[in-house]
Structures are given as C-alpha cells and as structure tokens.
Length: 244
Length: 75
Image (cartoon, chains in turn purple, brown):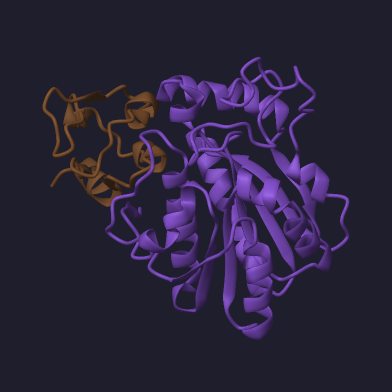
C-alpha cells in the first residue's frame, strides 16, 4: 500500500491561503497528477490574478504570471511555440469567468491543446469577498448586500454549461473538494485533463467547487456544508463533454 | 513507527481532518504551534486505520500517513 506523503512537485513553502480554503487541496491534486505522469520537467503552469497569484512559490515547475484573466491566451502562445511542453492554467472564478471570459471561450472554441483548472468558490476571495459572476442567487457578499439577484445582477454564470456548446472542447467536468470522495474524483478528472493534453486531444477544463470560509463568513464545517448543499445544487457535478 | 505524522507548524487549525476522520480519532490540541494555532492530535493511536482521509482533506499537506506501516503492524 502506498504511503501518503508530500510530493516533490510542491515546494516546502507554507501557503498563504486562509484556514479551510480549498486551494491547498487542489494544489496537492495538481502536484500529485504532475508527479504521477512524470511530467514535472516539461510542465509550465500559468498563474492567475486572484488568491492563487503566488502559485510560483508553491510549485516546483515553471510558472508564468499573467495579466488578470489572460492565462488561456498566454498558455495558447506557450503551447504553440513549444508543443512538446505540458501547459496548464490555474484560475479562479474572478479570473476565468469575469475578466477572462472571452479568452476562455475563444481558447476553448479554438480547441487549444491546454489544460485549465478552474477553481470556483463563488466569490472574489483576494479582494475581500465581492460578488463574482459565479456567486449564487440570494448569496450575500460585500457588493450584494441584499443577496444576489435583488438588483438585476442576474443568475450565476455556469462555465461548464456555457462551454459545452462549443465544438472545440475535448473534456469538461465539474468536481468539488468538499468531501473525500469528491477529492478523489477531482484528482481523476485532473489526471484525465492532463492525459488528454499529453495525447494531443485538445482543450480540457476541470471546474472544482471549493470552500472559502473567510469570505463566506462561515466556519470550516459550515463552509463544507455550503458546498455540499447549496453549491452542488446550483452547479451540478458531472462530466459535461467528453470527446477524448 | 507511527502510522500518521502531523507537521504541526504547517497546520493552520482549520479542522477539516477532525471533521472527516471516520474513526473520530482526532481532536484539536490544547497546545499551540508556532503560529499560535491548535493542531490535530490523535486520541488513541491504536484506533487509527491509516485510511488517509485526513491526508486527502488537509489543505496544507501537513499530514503524512504511512499505510505500509499500518499494514505491516496488522500482519
């Protein structure tokens, strides 16, 4: 039986994330997948603006930091110049679904051979809990004090459903990290997304529903319940597209 | 050798490991780590089945589980 220890793809640095944040779990999953596929030496990560902005401190592989919302565009360039490298982007919901919506949609439509890890915690974490495109209907944030939807904000943006109509997309799956079962299936999805890129099959995106206890103003246990009860209802888990 | 190791100075005290331990064998310590936070500790080391759920849920990878040690002990 295997021993469960820290992989060498993660550095020894302590993360700056708040207690109970899902980013740390997703970092570990990505690092384990890179380790298991043996691609650390040729992997280039693309960091967003948002909570995961310091990705280069935590990963023992090449990481490039991009302008807000532009990782799919930067990853496109890197992958086209160096097709033998494995290029992934790691983006939050403010980065991918707000300022970077057009980059995401066009990269997906072109079927770029990249892997996108999309962390959805339904709020802008780094800037202090403002409403994100993915904030749930009725959910409170510092910029939706009466709950989202009361003043014409519209319903949450569902990225997997949005991208599933595009022909260029190879693989779309929505997972979570709020239970051990979800963590294991999230790792499978991330591994498949990386394997698709190695096999040259095209654009793969894995959306991961994650906890943000600090900005939701909930305890760790209640944040886990919020993902399990509210977020999974608004954003149903599952495979949306699989053309691999 | 122990089946489970907590790197207590890496812990931020979120308590996800305590929440998901199927044996309910973890609790937050009375002592504090370098950051002034409680960290998890085992209630009864013999109860640990080395299932690894605490490792899977720890956002700071502060837990290591030695499943081979647990298996060898069982035999």
